[in-house]
Length: 109
Image 1: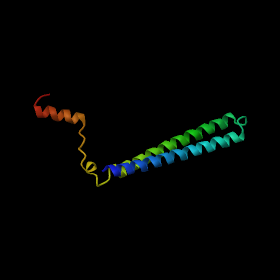
Image 2 (image 1 turned 90 degrees about the horizontal axis):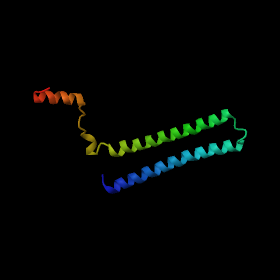
Image 3 (image 1 turned 135 degrees about the vertical axis):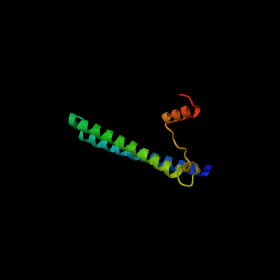
Image 4 (image 1 turned 30 degrees about the vertical axis):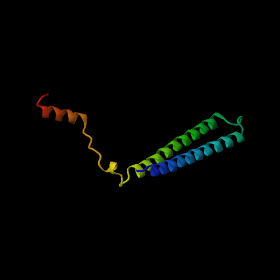
């Protein structure tokens, strides 16, 4: 992959990440404003708990969306079919099997 293609992909990925982050923060700010408009004194323990659950849920969903965005770009750009590095991956041999093969090959163990 040449430098212009890498730079283009990086620009698109960073732009999409910043857009996604900004959208998530906009949702959090909107929810905070709605809660403050209702009045802080009217915020009972139950409502405070629900607000924290919403906040945490939005943060988790935002992180999951970021991960999915980066995975999509990684699979789509780095491991596409035209990339020679993605075609020939060496097989993974478990360590126990490697030790057994080494012992039998050398005649020891």
